[in-house]
Length: 435
Image 1 (cartoon, rainbow, N blue to C red):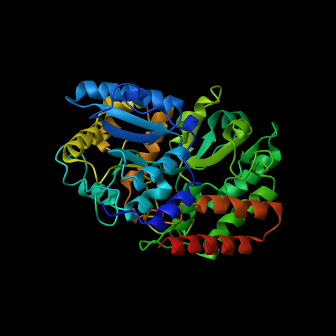
Image 2: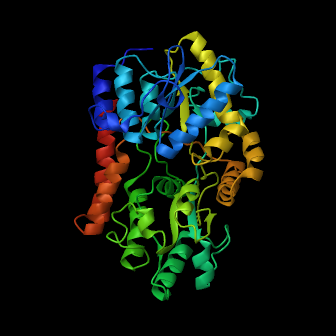
Image 3: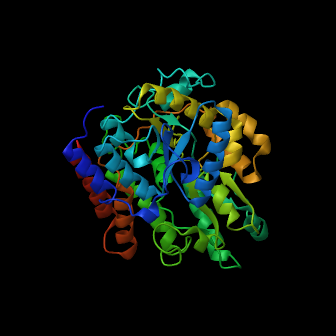
């Protein structure tokens, strides 16, 4: 592995907030679940909450029983602490053998040569994937990370509220446009006898914003690592939301506790919200008295073919891993992605299985909410899609920047055009500094 430059290390530290994570944010390392002797064990680093930690600890125990001579030392943290720890481990050349890749850091880690080429690992079974699948997984033409789930942008709606209020959403396809949704949202919010709003204000949702751009022939990022959207593209997205917010068709910024809606706060006050396909699994459990379903987002009347896309959470094998650990890493990646038993233990909160065989085999035992997610992901997976590119180095704070400019617009301290221009300039400058 090439040395991590002092400049890049400084940039990485800045991107994740600087400094080391406090001990309370990190789980103990060692055997599965944090205990035991970890000497000679494969180190597996990931993030999440306590429930995910418990589920993966159980799954790794099952994996060790199924895979001879395998011992796993799980290194667990919350999302922010995970990135902070990875920055420190990169500098010390002490990166875990297998690690999850935060979406803002996919190309940053690639630029620092953290990934090992997976195509040469004999213990990694890729036989279930088509050439098209494998091409879609690659970064810069190389299979150097392995997706372990699929998210797609969706509109989730409360079917209990829809039935109570006599609302029938248009079928996916003809007639399901952004204009027709806006009209429905305004009418519903103005006439709801329960005081419900049609939508939470969701302009900050990244997957939905990217979907909007791709329907208009733009990209979030370009292949050569630049901002892929125009000022007009961003402004049109903000304008759509501002029209609804000012018409009272969304929850107010104060009602939802910021530009990013707090689901526990708004979940029983809205008919619909934009989100990731996998969110239905955890979010529905917070309101067990209601039923939820997923729809594809509306489609612009002149949307080009292939605008749909798949978002992949990824894991990687460290480029500096010893040969014997690389072989074990291949076994672990295979088990995580190609074994139904694994997903029965950890659940589907990280998205639909990326392995098409596993996605089919897990469906009969999936919950109703998981089956709804599997259905809508399968529909997007079946269409021909144009390429999608990951966030370039230096861009990891773009969501924070977007949240800030949206706050300025909703507070009236910035015009939409000023906010769009400001965001693009700030993100572009950050990318150029990281180059």
